[in-house]
Length: 245
Length: 315
Image (cartoon, rainbow over all chains, first blue to last red; front, top):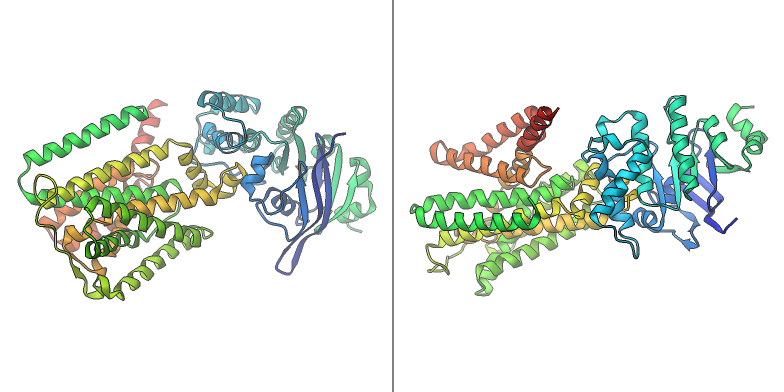
């Protein structure tokens, strides 16, 4: 396998006296599908927030694509190719779906060195992205016209519009029905085949197990397991965290 | 309408309007009143760049406006610069204040930002009250030049300048609205975290927004000393500027450049009529009542009302 796309070492984050993350070491290989699980409050979202720049970590270092990104604001990390979707969809509510996608295209893709899409190319990309997630016929609707699963798809499409190399999908399936979970998984598999490394943060075990090639388990701000999915969930510490003693 | 066509058409309209009013209207009061309305169009448009597009409610309009006015006072006392240059300098000064305010307060959100802008207005007013050179709390008389630099009376000159500034402000607002910058502003308004995650440099954009908004407000304030000829802190920092510049875009509609224009023309004209026919104390009451009515009946303003009608008809 090629060199790792993301190397997190010794990452720590505290909120006042509460230690949210402690000494987290994770390496994400280029092209892999990594599942990140853990009970509620174990620090999964905090980790995603620290890695994507929404929060700033207190200790440790993050190297993305061979480049340290500690201290970079979120928008610069996105421009480097590190995208995320939000646990609760955060669409731009006053803008239609096309404009929702134009923003990452204009501000991320066009801000990259050497890339400049014309208006027509941007329109074409928006159409393609919406078609990919099955929202093409709602292109000119506002986000409030979307169902829950469509909202998740828009969230993913917007993250993907920035043409990332690594995507954090933060609970992209929470609250969806089994068939809807399947729809999102299909989208994620396709993105991965297209060359995007994906870190899936998820509670739905069936989805995580079928998607991930490797599993990282967080409990109470610490990494307690990291390995092949079947082995990771059989780890006694993981069992204890999930099922109690 | 394309951008080029809009510039040509709107410029022609403004020039035609200017010439027509200068030829046809003899009574100076109309210029006096029209100046007020135009000034409110500029204020409302400027407010809307930050408040409507970017989603940050600014209650400090009075401060930016007065910074422009007092810049003109200082320049009046120290130099013999022509008024358009004073407006430019006034704009730069209040743009700097806008930048500073943005830098200090933009980590605040929603109501906290609004309170901070209100505080800024009070701080600025206190500074001016205690600055004797510009008249302090007594206020200061500003003698207009004897002659207007262009044909007609001095009030007609002021009116012409304000008309030009109005055109510039509205053109800027419209250009922003359709640009990448405007889309970035909208993203910030809708969700700042998501905007940042989509690659929008939110802090930089917010600073552009506060600076531009403040600069335009200051430019509209710079001719004020010559307009009123007696400037004092109580009137130049008047709360009515803040209230009006919030109310006008809300009533007209905050998502489009035309909204603040409609709101300012409507409210500004009503207030002028009320001042003449009933009493000048009634102004803010009218604004308040209209604001409440619109917030309840048409929260997206007149433009929003029209848009939803159109959408309903299409379905």
